[in-house]
Length: 103
Image 1 (cartoon, one colour):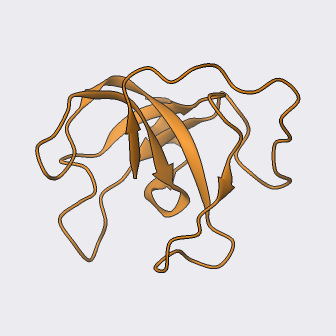
Image 2 (tube, one colour; image 1 turned 60 degrees about the vertical axis):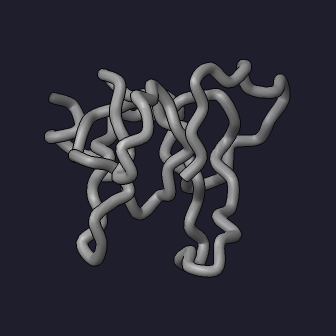
Image 3 (cartoon, helix red, strand yellow; image 1 turned 120 degrees about the vertical axis):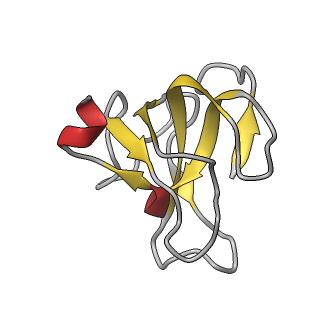
C-alpha cells in the first residue's frame, strides 16, 4: 500500500493494462480476511488516473495482481492509525466491484 496526499496527474500517453479495472470504476476497498488491515474499515472509492495500474512486485503479491490508485469518497485511516488519506495505491485483492461499490 502506498499512500499519497496529492500525487500529480497521470503521465500523458500511459498505457492502461488489458483486463484492468477501467478508470472511473466504482470500487469498495475491503479488509483482509487473514489480518487486521490494510485499512480500519471497508469504504467506497473510484479507480483514479494518477497512474495506470501496474504489476504488484511484492513478494506476497498474487500472480498477475495489479496495484491501482484509488480516490476515496471520504478520507480514511490505515490499520496503523495513520492518515487521514484521500487517495492511495491499493493492491487489486483489496478491491471489490459491484452494487455495494456504487452505493
